[in-house]
Image (cartoon, rainbow, N blue to C red; front, side, top):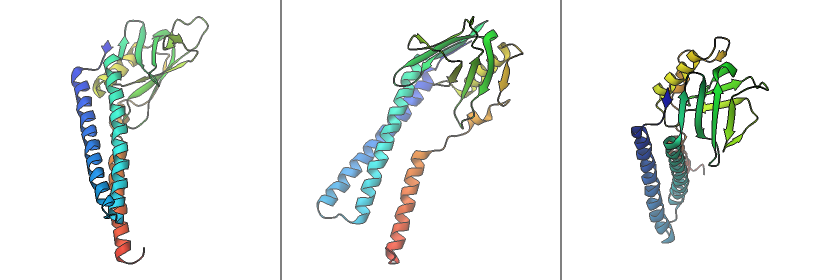
Length: 217
């Protein structure tokens, strides 16, 4: 069984990247307009406040654009594979480095399901015996570690869960499985911190406006 990101999934990531980039551009244009107003002596507290919110929001959107662009590059190159005897993975790690592994079922000590909300992933722990055939590589160099984290990078949730369950079926019965039966935490939505920023910014503006009208500030 081999799992790779499909073209449709990559295109969806591209569409989201373009949406964030367009929103960042819109924030930049409005920021320039406000800056012109401020330069022509319309620098009241409201204009200054919205200018700061738009600049911070633009930075957040550009950051998310960069993150999505990284995911697109990752999805185009990564894969997961199960054969008769082993698990093979190729995926990015950090700072442009790529990690890979081939772990034989007989050398797996336990499999631990990830519990982060909306993040499909699981950990494979090997025994670490002297005669083990399994290996973990980082940029082609073998690593002296026993734990490998397998992450979903551009794969659809259902396909990733099917891959994970197939692995659980393939490993020997002595292997400990730590996790839930249906992996429901993987399907939960992650918190939208970006939208929360704009909601909080609007709430702060209303509070400041009320306080000024009441003469508190």
